[in-house]
Amino acid sequence: MATDYDAPRRSEADDLAEDSLEELKARRNENQSGVVDVDESETAESFELPGADLSGLSGEDLTVRVVPKQADEFTCSKCFLVHHRSRLAEESSGQYICRDCA
Image 1 (spheres, rainbow, N blue to C red):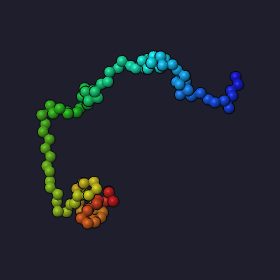
Image 2: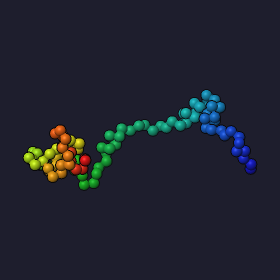
Image 3: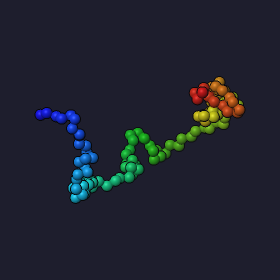
Image 4: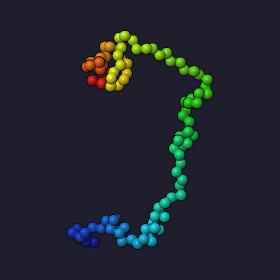
C-alpha cells in the first residue's frame, strides 16, 4: 500500500470537529463512570501499619527531657537548628550560619 507523505495528515481534532452534537453527547455519556469519589482521609484511616501503635493503646508514655540552649551553642539562621559553636561557619550582623547551610 502506497502512502502519500505530502498529503495533509488528519489529527484527532479534525475528527472531533466533524462529529455531530449527538455523537459527542453519546460519547461523553459513555466515558463517564459510575465510580463515586472517595475521601482519601477516610481511606487512609482504615489502613493499619504493622507494629505501629498510633492510637496510644499500649499505655506507654514517652518522656523527652528538653535542655535549653547552652552557652557554647548557637541557632542557625537558615535551618533553625541548634548547633555546637564548633559548627559555626560564619557570623554576620548577629546572624549565625552553620557549616551545613554555608
